Image (cartoon, rainbow, N blue to C red; front, side, top):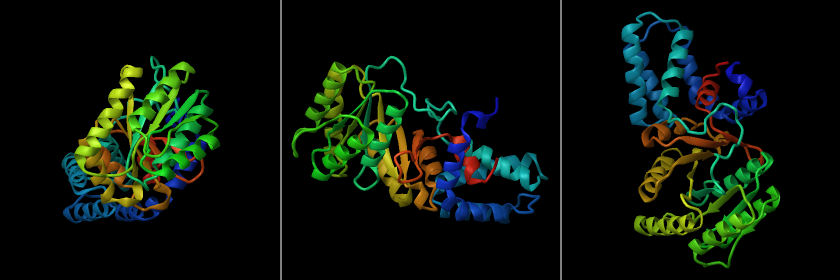
Length: 319
């Protein structure tokens, strides 16, 4: 059975549409650079380097791609445009960190053996963190799971209100306390309620401010300790949400949060509104953290499980 028998036509079309600005921008330049090319020379490699860096792939990852293409070129002196295109796709796909959940199906599936499966979501304000939580809740509920949300970002009143609204839209309960309450206490109450009510997926929001690194580390560590008392091994997923349109700022946020807590997965949002989709490649490669979800639109359905092959092939316009 072929790859796109699993990755449905609708999901592929939505992905193509969501990445349109990146495809038309930087990767459009790449396709033009490839047009009619039959050899890989220094001028072409310089052009590749400029294109990838300008797309926020990042300097380190760009150099890796160039080195891999040079090594392949040393073996295959004479290539056609199609072969070079395929070569770039293969090498970029190989750089992306593999997600343990990546099964090409596009289905939201909870790993077995967790009651509930606990996701702690981190990220700065404004990256689409609360929206991502709401869309995750909708997707898991649509897949047949019982979902509960915990409003542990008690620092900002709007965060609790936003999560409450997303819970209403997704049709899932939200556990919350008063503004300024202890975030770890909210997480504790959420998981206690989740266990008592047979919840399959519990998603915990956390404060979205980048205060000093020690304060951030201490707060997240406390939340994790408290959750583990209720559900051994929790959180099972620490999801860092990044705004794909912010380019190099997203790299810095990934660096800060990776230092503060053990991030297991990434969600990259707002890819439909930017030509900087290359940031997905650079961040995944440099931090070796798999991208698990991507946001490619504002609708409640516009959150996809990330598939690295489908992503790269969409950027290059390949079938």
